[in-house]
Length: 151
Ligand SMILES: [Zn+2]
Image 1: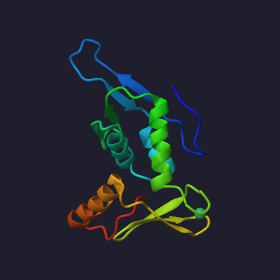
Image 2: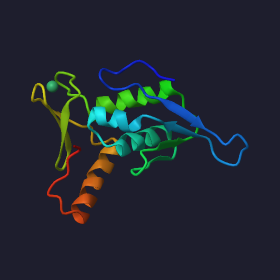
Image 3: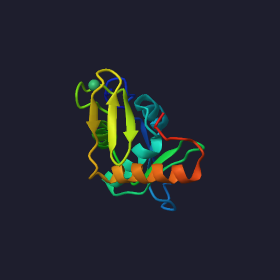
């Protein structure tokens, strides 16, 4: 089941996973999360976490397999709405609405547009903003890579 495209971003494809005999909890599998994340140049784990926050549900992105699961049964329209919110908050240029932006992380998070050069501020009150900053600090401590960007 798929909904309309958001620009060049693939439509969300989901599959409800249920054992059918009550031995496991119903989960929503976002089948093409990796493709969506790639089209936005953002880590799939962040979109998955955003879904979890907004739905108040457990969510998990498996780096090895690319499998994305959100606990509960969520319809594709609702998830597409959340994806649009994510794009609005963490991807789209506030100037020209272009989706090709680079994430700049200092004390705050900003989006630098590849098309118009506009630098947009990300809302730091969002829970995911806090997570992105914390994630960067952790990576800095444990990795030898000089800096962390989303690409
Ligand atoms: Zn722009």
